[in-house]
Structures are given as structure tokens and as C-alpha cells.
Image 1 (cartoon, rainbow, N blue to C red):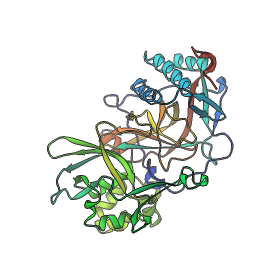
Image 2 (cartoon, helix red, strand yellow; image 1 turned 180 degrees about the vertical axis):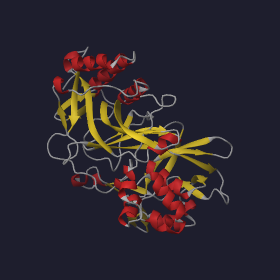
Image 3 (tube, one colour; image 1 turned 45 degrees about the horizontal axis):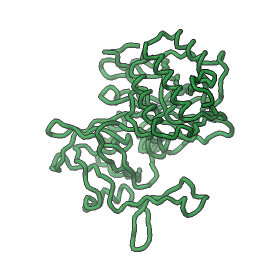
Image 4 (tube, rainbow, N blue to C red; image 1 turned 135 degrees about the horizontal axis):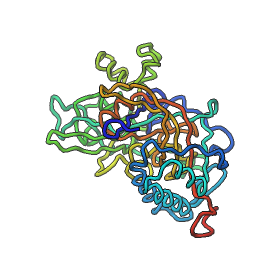
Length: 411
């Protein structure tokens, strides 16, 4: 599908109702018992038609290879009940990149995968058996390196008094768990919540502002997204990226306004939220403070950067639950995306499928029934990203061990 300079436009705002790509949200579906990925027989493979015509797929594959080149070659990656080494994944990605680099047609792609790859399907959510697809993007803000009457909302770096404590050293039962806090005398206490941080006029003595922006709502949504660009008064820009948080749980302001009857659930979108905040500035404190989580940032020279430490590729990089889906692995999704007209309105929803890569994670992206797609940046990405919340199917690909050029690399 080609739309206005080959731009297909997409969306995501379900994260504001159920959570976001980097922060814990409510209503996360539990992981069902049994394998989360089911290996398919070739006759059951989906139609591997790529709606992006393989644009930027080779680049995205290269980023996964960049990550895998830095991990031990024998590190295992689980695909349901099966396991493959990092070296096996490298061969899988290299063969896929070499083939799609010539922009083959769908028939050739399907034949190639059927002959050379194993395909695994996510079992999806426990009730629907489908995967819920949402998305995220890189917002653009307007800011300054010095505060004034216009630029008065600070984008904070990590506070000097914030402590992240790994609890696994205390007991095996705390493996993988940690707490975020600060010292109060000789006691570690919870780090202040959003309301307390924003009311503290001296907080910049603990956390250095990276920049100041001119819109409080934009800053709030920057924290939701986890990364973005701040365009400065001299025409340059800063890339800011999630560095950490105050450890408080994320609470959705979208769900708050739905529960209060202020925005109907079927009309909830990021655009509608921003409109409500603009029309009701007197409610902004109460609405924002409903979410006690507060995010701190760092600057990066590139990005946005995913959980595996590589630049994300628009339309290709996805955030998944790393306990379910092998990171860096090639994937394929089937869902619906919005087609946006020249006025920035959604004209209709269309069936869509494309190859993807597991390169990011998120606190609210848990289990086999959630996948969050990164759609890039710019006004169209933001407009469409305000609405996507559609179900579909998600598949993982790995080279069949019989097609490895080097023997004995499969598990």
C-alpha cells in the first residue's frame, strides 16, 4: 500500500488505557500455562506478504545482528519448547536479510520461508487466542536550555539521591526483583511520587534539568512514550531517552477519565485526551497526579534506543515480553492499521502484515497476547498512533537446523 510518498500511517493509544510501552499498566493479561509459542507445520504457515515492500527491513535486521554479535554464541534463545543458540539466530537473520535484500515478490518469500524456516505462532491472549497490537512513537517537543516564562517545565535527569536496590542478593526468592527509593537517615524509603516531585521547588538540586519545555501535557506524554526529541530555540534538537523512574506504579489517566464518564471509552485517543486537558486546565493537576509514576531522562546521540541497546526501526521494531518472545528474533505480524487522509483523519482500517524484529520491551507489554509496534516520529505518526488497538496474529521465524551452513549449531 503506497500513501503519500510511500508513507503508510499507523497508530497506538491503547497504551494510555491499558498502560504504556515502558511503564506498568493495569489489566495486563496473565501468561497462560503451557508453551506460549506453538511450532507450525509448513501447510499452516501464514501468507508472508510484507506491506512495507521490504523497505528498511534489512536495516532493522542489521540492528538485531549488532546486538547478537555482542552476546555469547552459545547463549540459548527459547521458542516455546524449543531452544536455539545466538549463533543460530545470527544465521537465521543473515539468510533472511540476504534474501529480502533483492525485494522478492510474495510468492518467492513464501516459498523461501517454507523451505528454509521454522515458524512459531503466539498463543495470544487466554480468552481470544489473539494478540493485541498497540504502538508507540517518538514525540517532538519545543524547549530551551534555559528556563523563562514560556519554557518552564523541566525535563529531569536521574536524581542524585535515587537508589535502585537489587533484592536478589538478599534471598533467592527475590531473584529479578528490585526496589527504587532514597535514604532517609539510615532507612531506605520509597521515592516521592509525581505530586511530591512537582511540588518540590528545590527538586532541581537533586535532579539536573536537561531542558525546559513549553507544554506540560507534552512533557507528561513524553514520559509515557519514554523517548523523544526536544527542538531548541537555536534550531538544534536533543534526543532524550528513558533513564529510570521513581519506582511508583503507572496508573492510566485515560482509564481515569473513562471511569469518571468524561470521555467515552469508544472515543478515547491521545488526541481526545489532549483536547480534554486543554479545555479543562483546572483539572490538570488532579489528572496528572493520578499517575504517581515519574520518568527521568538522559540524552542520546541517536535513537530511540530499544531494550537490546540498538536504534529502533520504524514499523519494524516491536516491544514484547522478553520472557515469552526471544529478543532480536525475526517476527511477522498480521493486524489492522488505520489509513490516514490528507487532513489527518482516519479514513478506514485495512488488513496489514509485515516482518518485524523483537528489539524492545515494556512494563505493560506482558504475556503472549501483547505486542507494541514502534512507528517512528512526525505528525502523521502521532495522529495515527493515537488510535491503534487491534487484534491479530504474531509469528516468530528461525532457520530450520537442517538448513544451517555449519553443523551442530542447533539445540
